[in-house]
Image (cartoon, rainbow over all chains, first blue to last red; front, side, top):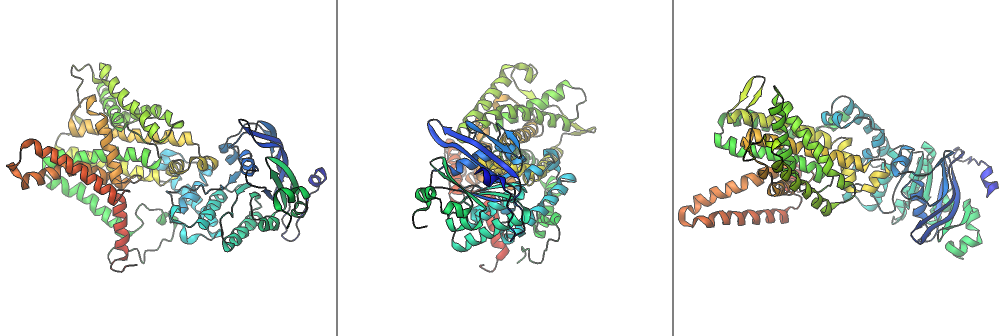
Length: 273
Length: 355
């Protein structure tokens, strides 16, 4: 594992360059009372890569994401983000540092339109205050328009122009997932955490979502950490894969290495792979 | 045929952001404002102005306040009447104790006192939600009314606890006639409704709604739920406070703390439920419905049945019909009159075609 960390790989076919380690998790342990959700897990995420976390249900994948963006606080272990160690952090701090995420169960703001949902994603970049909003004149309006332009770029990018004024509650599942991605992208994150972005989708929707994830990674250089159960997708788009089982790390490496790892086959992939 | 947006293209985001993006709506609003500002004071009777229109406007303002908190920020509250009391007694004391306090500044200061109190009673919302929070806001309702009675300083040691609002004067002009009081109330309510609309369509409003719809997701994209909730409590109580000050100054003239009881809080809550939770328009519709319907029922009953029925029966029958109508409306349209209006507009857009 140390050797693998030492080398900096490039992927010539897309021209994007895998950079330095951006997020380094060391010996993370997370317990809820007596239940050990994560035990002594260490891995890192490099800049611009697509890093997947796989494992059977209950392996601790979502807990891992929650640790990364400060929703859960591990009892042991250290997390280095851009080389800076962090102890206690809340999701708000994670967001200010440029970490955005989507949820396994869609967590959109149901009563708001698609546009408002995505605009909310930019709230950290909004500097005007309540009193300026009350007047909706001058700075507040300028800011609203400036951010609207950015949001429209995201809308174009994800091809959801036709639904921008629709309340999200009325959208089909696949599109809701896409809007949630749009809301995360609107924050222009450096690190994007995706929790099962393709769960419950049909083949076409999955293809679209894969394309968007690859495009985000390619065009914006966003680092992506991905949890997904569709092994075809994971092995196809990931640069490196980490495998969890019962809160322990059982494998880590490129898709090919992981695919052929006997422990991973036994725990998750099954013999037919 | 008349109400259609076809051919109205938005070429800039400014145009797309308008409160009324469809031209017919803008014209309609202008006509409506002209009607209420010009025609009504000229032709309406004193009774209509003083007993119907002024209270409808004031309750609309209070309902907007509660709608900001409950409809937009998702925090249930049963303390609106108490915040109105703070506004009324606050404005009274500012104008009583500071010489030459301008009227409008006085009611704004009354509103600000209510905002402060509202934030204090909003603190439990950081830990508790839903019905439990509603019960916690009951504490505000009872405590504030108790405090206003208990400490006679608030009512300037008046023996009955009743305060008599000072005469309203703005720039030397005394507002004594019902027409002038109506226009003053209408102007204040119009400005505050516009401000409320601006707030809910900006980042502030989106933060409130985000916390209402999914607080965990809101936190993950960098919204501080604490700030969002407390700012909603502050703005909401400010609106209720200003409404309370107007209630004392332009509507009743004399108020006592017990006038701002739980019944009034419930009344305002019913207004937003019937009018439409999370809608500024709904606040007006709900207030009009709750104030006007009993009067309408009364008129209808008297003109149809007249003196044929025993006197006690009439008022009870009114209450029964009133309650029945509320239930009927909630079954037909649980999202309130504002949604009904929206559906009607959507239908009108396509009319006379079915799709």
